[in-house]
Image 1 (cartoon, rainbow, N blue to C red):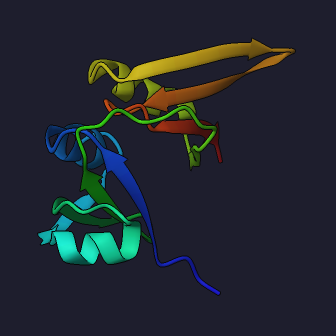
Image 2 (image 1 turned 180 degrees about the horizontal axis):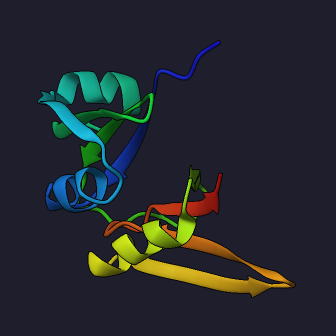
Length: 124
């Protein structure tokens, strides 16, 4: 089995460029609209939705634009970088929300996009 893509809901199309392209280095491949009849059949949501399809790091993303704030949950991604601190510096320069929690002799590190999607950050 191979993971083909991940889909996330975000609240603003601005996040596509600022967070996913500029910070996480994904490339926008295409943008499309999922019509309401198909959205209803798949997700039981009777509303058309704008979708952005991006690729990078041997992974594809579908970002669905939906204005409703995210509900409480424990969903998150874990991303690893060759130099975790260099990535966090880049995230700080772009005003990403950073959560650093001391834990014993090390820390755990998370960032959030503008819609509240959480990404754990590790070093390779």
